[in-house]
Image (cartoon, rainbow, N blue to C red; front, side, top):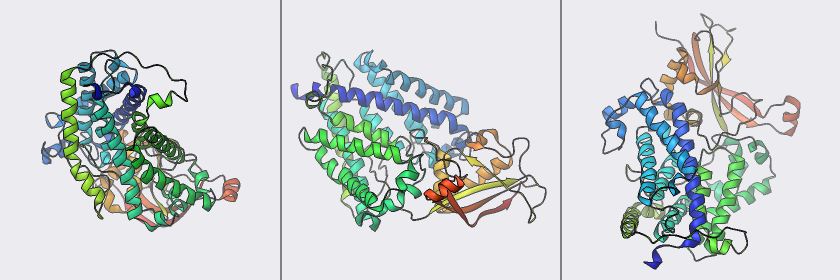
Amino acid sequence: MEWFTDADYWLGRLGFQRGLAALYFVGFLSTVNQFRALIGERGLLPVPRYVATVPFRQSPSIFHLHYSDRFFALVAWTGVVLSAALAAGAGDRVPLWASMLMWAALWVMYLSIVNVGQTWYAFMWESLLLEAGFLAIFLGNERTAPPVLVLWLLRWLLFRLEFGAGLIKIRGDPCWRDLTCLYYHHETQPMPGPLSWLFHRLPRPAHRVEVAANHIAQLGAPVALLTPQPIASVAAGVIILTQLWLVASGNFAWLNWLTIVLALPAIDGGYAAEVLPLPEPPAFAATPAWYEGVVIAVTALVAVLSYWPVRNLLSRRQLMNFSFNPLHLVNTYGAFGSIGRVRYEVVIEGTDEPEITDSTVWKEYGFKGKPGDVRRLPPQVAPYHLRLDWQMWFAALSPIYALSWFAPFIGRLLDNDRATLGLLRSNPFPASPPTYIRAQLYSYRFTDRHGLRKNRAWWDRALVGSYLPPVTKAP
């Protein structure tokens, strides 16, 4: 079938596959470094307890068959090694069927992790990585030209990602419609980056331009993706530029980088070669009939599953970041339907004094990514994902978001639990555990230029009240 492949997209496929494998690597590595404290046998939300109550059909995972921290680590490290190999091009050095098995193994392993990860893995970029990873299985390798149907499925995924995010904004907070959301967003976003202070201090007219440009990128460009070339390539370029702006202005794990990677296969290499010095495409072998049949079947599956996200996009009660099936296929996406006007932070403190008095000295725990010390420049952590730091942002919005894990977290701090402390930047009690721990709620504001020069502080903070009164270990 001559229509089945298009060699002009070989370079976009190459960039997508290498980039996706690199992001898989980041996802598996963040899991290796954090799982014991979060979902391990002695974690805040242990996997064994979860799989004992949730059946396999609701959360398909190899960890329903067996779980131990050692086995989980083996799976995660296998994902690290395999994704690194694919990022280095191993998928192009083996037969097509073997390449497909390698991508399928990555998908099964990460799906197994996400489906037992509970609240720590309930972020949109987890489902997005899984959906993109599933489609990557059927994209082929350098022995076959890129299949047109899978290229369109990737474009359909990018459309839902961006258009869904644009609709949720227009239907949500009025500040998106009056172009004022960026007056607040750079300051109140979950995890600011090292340039967020500068972005927040842009003139207000510039913020209005930012919002207008966002609407163009999320409501206009996705529609243009579905039009003929070279318009679709231009639309992909607009999305990439917008995502690079977001990369510079905040920390959103691998969301922005994965969106960029998804846009690459929409760029027509034939048109791009007219303006850029691109290499010639390699010579591709004939496409196997079995491969054509598999791709057509997968395309039909995605078409059927698309009913639910399309209905959601058309609904006035649009769901944001929702999977309609436990395999995380053909999901609905969206972000920041509402924007906070004030930033709240939960600050956790401890003391080693035997009794609490008015003169008790409280020492603050430092987190790796989220704001704490007002003089600390917000770090760049993306595309790495600090799962505890992100959940602390939600906890500051409402204690309801932390009901399942906050009390166990405090208990681990009272024990000086090594794995839990590994999630933090600093422990003020390295020699022996604290006797009491409390949590205070603060409002944080970026300083102005005068405050930054005078106090060398990036933040001003004011105490709002007690989040958790002093607690100690039970006798």
